[in-house]
Length: 317
Image (cartoon, rainbow, N blue to C red; front, side, top):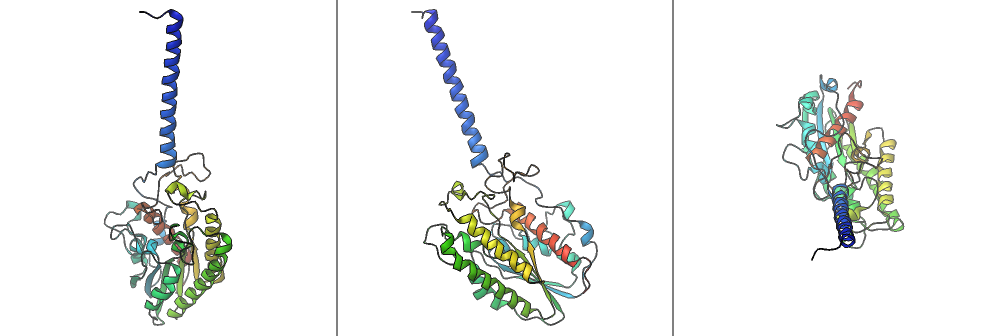
């Protein structure tokens, strides 16, 4: 039986609305996935440019001892051998980008020695207890060059699985964290003193601050971790301690990882954000959220190299 014209028109309108609604829901789901759940890594170089001219001639003929201290960021967790930021500071990896060929510390320090004492998963407490005792005192003719990432694991461990504690404060309130923040300040100042004493001939300490995979929003639950209302505030307090340390000691130089990594976290595709990086809207973190991926490590080595070039250029040794 053929439907009457009014019935047929109602059915067509219903079908059209149903199809339209289905398409809109599909588009909304696709947009949600693209802008909230998708973290594209991309390929190619990452991070700021480095001026090759700064590395065209040696910075000093003195013996230089490069030391890595800290957590998995300096240990290079997740990177292939030769592709961590520490490794790439020392020498260029086999698959180096053309603009970075010859841009490394081996090119400017002909008498470079190096060791990396950093350990995956370690906190600032471990750095004092386990790493600094392995740093031997150097002769007076050796210049120390020390790179450190510390404090990040103090914040993120144990991912909310245990009650907050010093060195594993995830989920803490600011009131709970205040004494731990002050302990970190004391600990960091002691680390600087110990390192400085190990290099009676002088040293430069390049101290990285702590990046934020939530891109400054603090909504870490999008990364499938428990909500942490005071997380950003405590994170900012730790970074303030690191900045104050660099301001207090002339041999300490802050490397601003936090600013450079904004826009490369779990919201990297969200073009409406103020931190959106139109030139590279890609994710710089490893699958575990707390370490960089290889593009992130490339960015890190550029940040450290630029700060080192700023410090060493025009300085006589």
